[in-house]
Image (cartoon, rainbow, N blue to C red):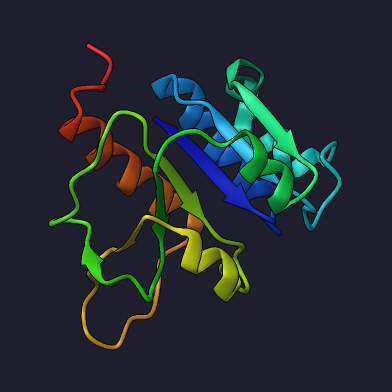
Length: 149
């Protein structure tokens, strides 16, 4: 199981996801460019000292990520055709989350093997990317028996 972030824009969100990653022992792929300098203090503040324990792989762009990707791509998207509650995760899945402002472009959306949405109440569009990462990862690890004991 891995988390992949497509061109993240907000350092604090990435820091929170790195903390999540460290706590659950799940590696993170960061597909650049990012909307902030990777040395941003907000990244460190949100990740606290946990972020240093996260396994991070940075990729120059989508093509660089795709050239080394192994595993099924499970895209979290508001345009998803499968509810998180109906999705069947596998241990080798990569949970991909798009940028905060734009999500992922259509070409990336089409490359996903699974397009998953988190059902929300009527009138609500989306959750924060860090919150979505936590919800999706917890469900994926629960299904695949990958939760720490």
